[in-house]
Image (cartoon, rainbow, N blue to C red; front, side):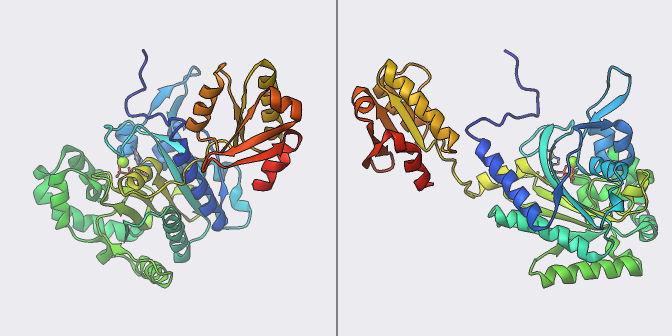
Length: 418
Ligand code: ATP
Ligand code: MG
């Protein structure tokens, strides 16, 4: 037998409704915020992620699924959604239209990580991208979109943490301070962080190793080094969140894993799903579009991990609306009535009524059992008598209630019910 690759998961037919529910909720949330879907390829040129995600990130350094295709091109399965959306925005000149451009995506993403609960090698993200709005209201809009999504899913026990990581100017000043603080502790840090120390010290704050986390708790805070512009921006984001009734904490250690972030960064975190508690992360990345060769364009967005949301909902008993079985199961007793059952099912489906019949030659009794198992809401049995009289009985499975109906009017009978 061939097994599923490590770190990937099947969504089985009996669980697919959970995914549909989350995806539908994502699409509805996006529509409420006037966002349209962008679909980009599952793979891109590796170069896109080297530049768009950044070569000091874990994603680029350790986690990408990169391979040569038969034309000797270096190709990478997308590890996240922003770089592809940004590439497409530039390539299709979307910036020429009315701004901001507001987009969302629901994608599979691929990262070669150590699989754990809530950490997979193929996982799925719902994300949004808002391009062309520099002001703090766009940041707040994006945070509200994430919050509204979680709220619609009935997820309550998540906390919103925000931070600002400033712009190039404030970060240069901060990096110097941070390095001065960390320098005496270099040998206490993990190997990865020692490498980050020169290349991108800010990223050290993102480290998940206990010894580095302990060190980071005493580190200077970047919000104390923001320039006037970044500081005003951050204050305005906070007052907009407050105005909209959203509670938040300022967490000076959120820096996000990606190189292109500027100013606002945020995470929605749960304590109910173990170490992988971040269900949604986002922020502003004003440098990205230009970095990828486009005109300078401010950008802000988030990505939420669907597997972690499902885990959170399951662990905290948040209900998924149950999937309904077919509206009607039509059972046939013998050769002729089976054909009639099949014909009825075809007619019902044509009218948009979900209907099912037997496909494995079951006895009548076994058909009833099967209808019950698949959750059929009504059952009709057709035999010689029904064929002759043109009448049948519709049994409502919920309470066993039986109603007579004309076979020729069966579609109308069920249409009235919908
Ligand atoms: P983490 O710190 O947990 O590694 P990240 O900072 O790498 O997360 P992002 O790149 O911001 O994550 O991705 C956004 C969201 O996608 C995360 O908040 C999480 O919900 C989800 N996610 C990221 N990596 C994985 C993964 N390997 N498996 C499942 N979900 C993931
Ligand atoms: Mg990660």
